[in-house]
Image 1 (cartoon, rainbow, N blue to C red):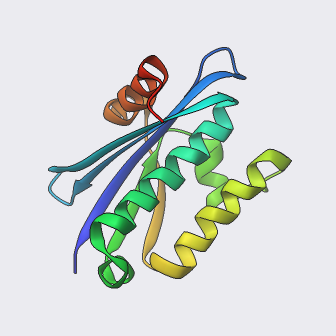
Image 2 (image 1 turned 30 degrees about the vertical axis):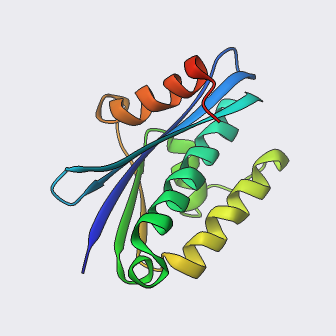
Length: 142
């Protein structure tokens, strides 16, 4: 069974402000498989965090294909404790603007990633995804 790790991060300058999402996908040995970034326009940091997770899962699905995605063990690592706790059901999603993203993640989880795990990690262990989210803002990469 294949295992992939998706590091995700969202950035918003001035919160809300110009925002970006980044995802860094590796295999179980830490070898980079894919980097992705997306400029989000004006958004909050929480919105950007969720969009980064959607971006990472969407790219992983494209990369693996539907059949392998369903069989793969997927771990999404993020430095947003709030997002991680909301996605694992510890906290409720109270911000209405996050509901569409939460539903997109839930739908990806149910349809393609039944073996998914959401993990909170320290910010210093999420440097690649942080770099990508900031590059998205700097370069306005859509």
